[in-house]
Length: 397
Image (spheres, rainbow, N blue to C red):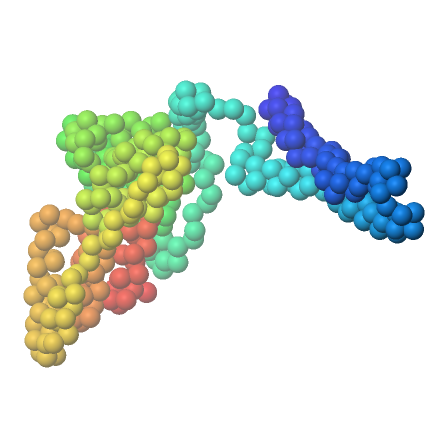
């Protein structure tokens, strides 16, 4: 309220300053020198008549002429004098200034938004993070997953798996298999619960990939939100590797969700600038980093995504069909070996599945599809891309 009182007072002061000149009458102009001259001529004419220097008839003609010129000079001064401007014009000017000011503030400002210094804003962000709902609450509040079209016999097998696995609580492979198939059905909450069993059973033997998969599933189950339980996993991964791409993405997402885009930018920038744009977490960071930079007040230009060079494309276009087929098989073999040894983003796995489909090697495409589906079970977008590739290769319907 105090803010608006100040705005009204300032607007009133500006309005008065603008309107005052319009209401103030123009200053009376100084007497024309012609008027004084002709008046002095009349006085001099009377003196000449008294001294008998000029004849009465001539004096009469001269007086008429001088009087005529005096009246003309005096009328010029009267016509040049102006009165005050119309009050209507002054009111319109003030109204236009007020309307422009209010409109500009409504567009550029934040009506109704209280004063929020940086220190208070950071404190509010900290409070939001400290009072976040639990993983269970976030999962319960998330919208239901989209229904996946799968064969009836597959769904029946998953139902049996749900019944069997709990009867063997120490079977790590059973829980891992259940997590994989729940992910295929997009039951991320159930998949996260199963993967949590896997990590707990493996204990110290759990790999970073096991933890990353659990983290992906938990965030997917919470509709993209990072819960306190998920944050614990993020901290575990960062303690092991400060440059962990998955952990940096989710920590940035957490701060971005709690009004700290500056921290999100610091988390995301290294993985966006140097990471593989086809990797799920890098791609997700790329999609949000420009907005985070804008809200943080930082000028940032998103780097171009890397891809095949123009020379590679030109070389492939110049080959014969036989040579091109040979090159494709060589590239497929190299890609397959690299993924089997070092792993890679979901886009590479999808590319390999499609390539085997084009080459007519459906069995190989099926093997890659099953392996990739398990590797990227926690990523909804990666799973969707792999499914599209599997359909294109004729592996699934």
